[in-house]
Length: 224
Image (cartoon, rainbow, N blue to C red; front, top):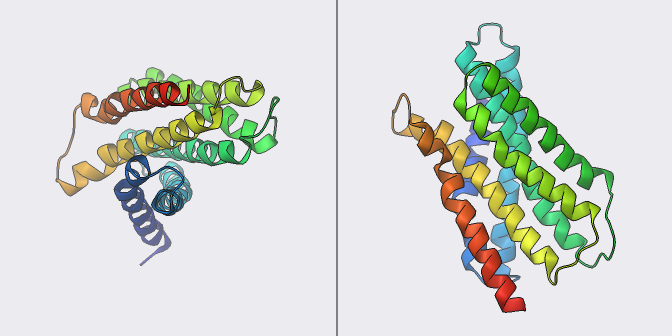
């Protein structure tokens, strides 16, 4: 087994780990043992996915034999790595600084959203220039999440339990990246499908965004 195959297996293992555990923290008691344990298992899987995705995408991009389609998928894989790692990191860091009273400007906490913002803009431009709908429109999610994260860090918190909403928003945003990556890369290969509709690629975003909004409304009413 060569290095590429080993990293690919690590990527798949991390992806399935995250895919099967992301829902457990949502339905279990918040702050409980099951919530924390499953949350860290999910985060560990996403770390493996993100790091391996950078290597896999880089290997495809540096391969002179890669076709335009392979390059597009490699770029999307790289963007998913940035999106998932940024949102997962954000979801964890807001818990650490939940007592803050003013603006927060730690280089890493600001740097990750800036990286996601620049990646989103660059990926969307590439998608429009090369007529790749997935790369044209999906980065808008990263654009929204990155500006939201920057707005949260750079302004003093005004909302009660602000860290709570940012935590589950960040982690569910990361789960959108997880499920989308599986929909684009994993499911077609497992089901031996050569191509899927663009709507199916956007389905995780369409389904999970209302869940994030609904939970936000529910907990705002509960805490108030």
